[in-house]
Image (cartoon, rainbow, N blue to C red; front, side, top):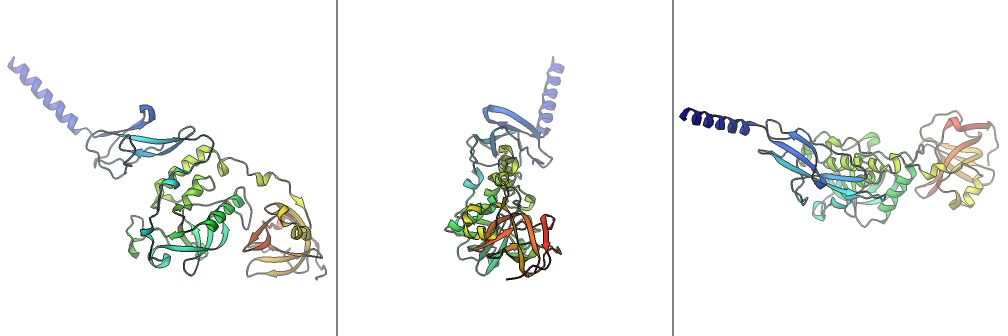
Length: 366
């Protein structure tokens, strides 16, 4: 009897020790107590990664340590015992929502009495709009900002579906904003602690790489949530988790760049004279048109040329084309140009030499 009791005691102690040595497990729980996945923590008690579920007609907003969604899960959290994380979700019913943009805030104390270039964050005013991911500000001093972590469709040199729409949205909200704040990615060498010191402050063409806030809303993030851009290079972003989840949710909706047709591109291309464009601008604004005219001057400094139809002149933006078809005195027919405004002036863009026919190489100039 004593041997039996001793054996049972040893066995119980052994099983207890084994149980204590077992790594903790984390259960990822969806609404209605549906288990999505169970993962085992690493030797240091942390999770190597966590799942990001793609849910039908549902926004996934993140994992929380409590059912009331008050404490957001941190990947650096150490688990000594088994635990459960809870998914916060939001139904998608056809109307685009911006839950992350609505929640993420910027307090005035974070930027007051600071300047963008010197302190990494500061107020600015709108100077002029370029496209959906590039804007000119006074911060103070002229600053061209290329938005971090996004890439909206083109709407300057070439026109892509949802490019003009994203560009107009950005310009509209910034034009109406009471407060605009520009923010660099924090950089430890400049007095801003960050785990990601590799993010540069300037990109191509000397543009400043930054986050743009308007009235407390992060515009970079909002453009992703609205389906105007995908998230890119988020691994080094202080807002990376929000940007990545916003991208996942936006793809689920199938809206805008994620599968929806841009109505602008469903319209017919119109044959029209330059005089008609000038006299009835509102009827052709943000439309594709075919025009004919004589090139009266070419500006290499801003990649434009002037086109004259015998009565009126309009500026054409040709980007970086080196086409021999762009010559003063050439009479040309150009298809699929796009009518827009640039810094308050009427302009045609979307120039493509493959859609340009030279009608006369020695047309009379005005």
